[in-house]
Image (tube, rainbow, N blue to C red; front, side):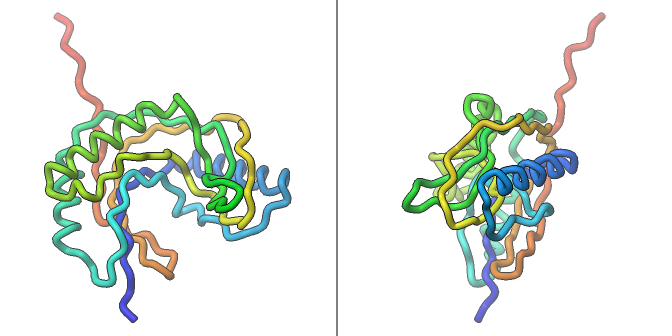
Length: 188
């Protein structure tokens, strides 16, 4: 059987945020008696656009995605997640996730701008128009109602293109693009 490649654009939390996220997951598990398969700390991320699963490595798609990532001009921004709960409903709960509300407006704008660059690179059919910003934490198999938590924040300063080797729990970084702070006008 061929190894599958799951390509996606993502943002990763800072090391300090990873520690806070793992602690928030543990607290939610203790509060609700949750068991399940946790997402490894080194694989915690926000998926911006999923580029599908592929049996063979999609070189042309990877090249186009890299072109889109390289063209995206964006400044660093802050994200703030302040809720934890199931991403789905009672019938199909999906994973336990971190999420947030209006405080993720900058993240939503960034995701849309990346989608625009994907369209320009000829891979716009992969751009997601519906976006639920979240960080998957655990796959407990049960529904957990969304609840407010102490906000978890970090500064986003790079965009990643990741190849998740399906079934191997490996995230290979294929592309990395720093977000650059623009210089302000000089004062004379």
